[in-house]
Image: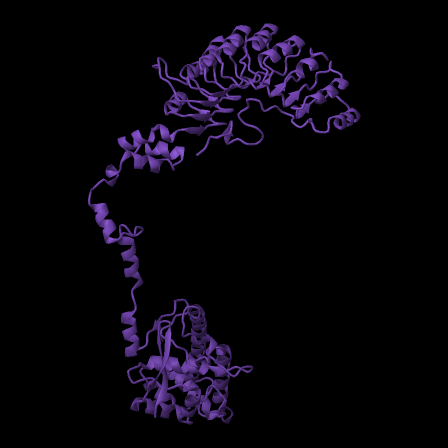
Length: 581
């Protein structure tokens, strides 16, 4: 006869067929007996705890009420066969056998399900054990309540019930933790009525449960094949380069001791360095002497944007020595000294310089401009100037655009010097510089004939109609002219303005002495496209003027863009040139 057994090892569970031994048949014969176990027989047993439990269980079978086959306490051979539980091998200890039987008692059928749930009715089983003890004691004539054996049996029954309850809780936790990771988890199949873990007989209520492994040879083989987590952890931690994956070819390449960067030419290194940010280039300069030399190459520093930053003392000299062509220093705070004292004379490659609203002293600005001779466009908006600085500006004869908006310190001599020297000047913004009448006269008299854009706004009481007439004769090719806030202009200035044959943009905003009817005369200028007259006309007069000048845009530009490096919200370029790589 083959009996089905359950072997437990770790998280894996399996059933196996095994032929019961002679010891098993004897043990089943004992359980199938319906006679009461004598107290003297229990005293002869070597393990008092186990025999007490068996005696308590077997004694319950004397009553006819517990002979019903559905009773969980009727542990006959047929009942075990119906539950699918086979006896353990002769190799197993009596402790394991009794623990398995105790777990089998707790395996009862659910009232609302066809499945058998192990350890689901431990509390109910413990209550039934106590009840059956009371019944069996009441039906037995030779045992009284005062007998020490009876008290011993009752205490052992309570201890067994408590052990079964502790075992059930431990089994629930073990099944819950193993159900997600084990592919053979029986949570979705018909569950086993016998617990898969053999409990140690010496369980303490306060101590943790010690589960004995199965004595199956197959389980021992699996335990031997199971890798040790301690060794794996030690091996990972002990590895020196566990975070680096290196192929044999890569390891040989690294361990060869050859500096392959030395085999690269400077051209290849520069082609690599050009993709690096400026901060990274500064760090690369600290690697070695060759990297330091290559990182200072002029091709890597063609453009630089340091707007809204603070430059430390001496840093400006190092920047311009790198060979920068386009640099933006708008609203930059340049700390003193910007250049080292007794600096030797050198020439920078700087061509486009934006110092709009920067914080820089006159001495530093003078030193900076003294090293610049190739400037093409410069912006010194809201910067303090003097005659020496204007003289250095005049030495850059290739200047094409100059922005001196709201600059201070301009005199008639400095203006005359710049206008006479800058013959290539095409765009000039000298608005709101508080020029004197002599400075305005020097401006319109010596200005370059190649000028096409001029902003001279803000000359409230120093610019007259005669100055505009002289300007028309000096610069006949003028395209843009801004005369805003020149309050001394009269209606006769319109006649001088109409002589500009190529004028496209005109601004006479807030020139209150010019009547509105004079603006209609500008209709005869076919080249004039835009006209700004802010603060001159009412809304009704503006509608009338728009009807008279249908092809002309009126009041389209609030701010002038003459010679300004940046227009609108664009702050990553100056004069249309990118300042960032």
